Each structure stands twice: as C-alpha cells, then as structure tokens.
Length: 158
Image (cartoon, rainbow, N blue to C red; front, side, top):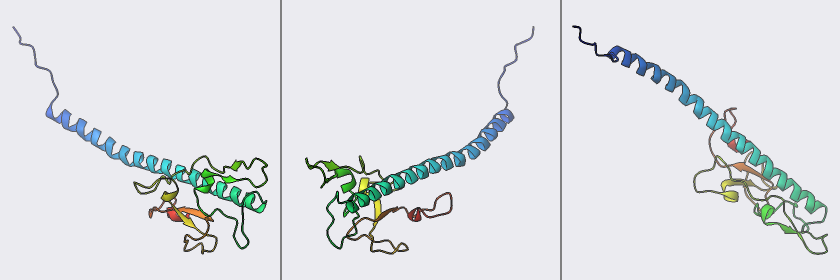
C-alpha cells in the first residue's frame, strides 16, 4: 500500500513568488506616487485659475464702479477673503452683495494646518513678479510650496 504524498509548495517556489511580487510592487509604487502628484498638480492649476478669475472679476467690477474704489487704489481686492465674503454692489438699489467666489479654495500643495486664503502667497500690484510681496491689495496669488512640479517648474511660479 502506498502512502499519499504530502502536497505543498517548495521553498524555491515560495522564493520565486515573493521575488515576482517584490518586482511588481517596486514598479507599482512609483507609478502610484506619480499619479497622486499629478492629481494634486491638476487641483493646484484649477484652484489658481479659479481664484485668479475671481480677482479679475473684482477688478472689472471696481473699474465699472460697482465696488468702492478710492482714488489712487489699483482696484484689486484689499484682501483675498473679500472674494467669498462679498462686497456691496454700489449700483444695486437694495445694496445687494456681489460674490466673486463661493469659497477660497485651499492650496492643495500647502503645508498642513493652512487652509483657505492663508494657504496662498499673495502678490500686490506694486510688487515685482520675480519677487512677489504682499501689500495693499491682492493682484495675484502663488503656492507657498517650495517643490518643483512634474513639468520642472517650481509651484511658486505657476
């Protein structure tokens, strides 16, 4: 009478299987990291565009006389929060507010703990583009993240 053979995996089969899984994981992790970074960069582009359109809409409203603009001012919002807080429409008989954004979107590349308007760097109309500085108004915004994008351009220059 024959005894049944015990079936199982050999040590060599186990080592080969683990090696194949290790190679697949080594390939998958960088691809997943790149996809994650690309998604955050798309969010950054979208949020920059959205806020810049709000700033431009505020400037147009100031030039049209719908928003208070004192002599000598640029017409850009004094604070980024005004885009979502709203400003009084001078042409409206009921003094309705004009809202340029529903909310200030956060910088997806910002450091933890920063949200909304405080997550962005602000450039005033009077500052040079090479060295943006905050001032009496908000002419443009930029990311405070010191990193470099997939395209090789620092986030600060987007």
